[in-house]
Image (cartoon, rainbow, N blue to C red; front, side, top):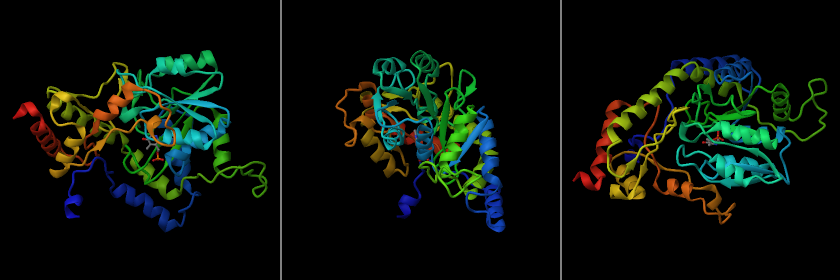
Length: 372
Ligand SMILES: *Cc1c(COP(=O)(O)O)cnc(C)c1O
């Protein structure tokens, strides 16, 4: 167990005095539930951070996406296009509504959803596209927005992994019709668990707020006309979130410093492919995510075992969701499948030090067949 405890973690939050002060304020004042000043403050400040007018905070990111789809009246008979290479929540949120997730491949240039594959997957039942900004790199939004314009579709950004990333100079979350973020403990900022919907569409924001409060009408709070949810964020979560948000520039800068350090040390190692960054992208490197190809020697899974022996925690890339038992579509989505087999997440925490990065790089380079 002590060995486990001393692993360099893939991701851990950095929490300090400010978090303690704001959370203590909630406890001392008794405002620990979803009423309290921090929720609205956090919603406004986070929305503004990503260039949006409205934010509706939720208990986690998965339900933020469900809330958004429900508020957009997406349901049975509808199809929603998602990348297969993502965390399973993207597809599950679609399934919760009764709509069908349609899986498409990644593009080699960004590892995010391939707009050409999206164009081919459109049917008369298609209602929405959910690009995912994978590991902190924005998806190519303009071709998706153009498709959406032509076919009258909604574009929802799954920005759970990309707080602070930019697309052609604009913050992610502000380009589509709406977006969601996650504040789970391993994300760039955290509220413990948490999420938010952001949008510039006032009617949509109001509809999300209404549905997440059990479709409550302020003038008649115990008489409900439709089935809503209790998806609200607590004041405790929002207090933590506000403290984190006040430091987000530092957290993002740290992520980018970590990535530059890894890139400098690893870009020439035979068999390693560095994560791409498109020229239009402001990558925030939520996870530093290289590929381990055949030329490296040991394969990805062997490398993970070896690194763990040396005290370094890593994660494999997400598995393509279309291959999981509950979806299992039998499609051949070869770019995503290849990335998923070779990809590894190296430690990328807010707490990671340059000495640790050097240790991780030395250890990894030592495993490369041509280094001995
Ligand atoms: C983390 C994550 C989510 C879900 O967020 P939770 O807050 O964990 O529910 C959704 N999509 C992606 C791509 C994620 O990485």
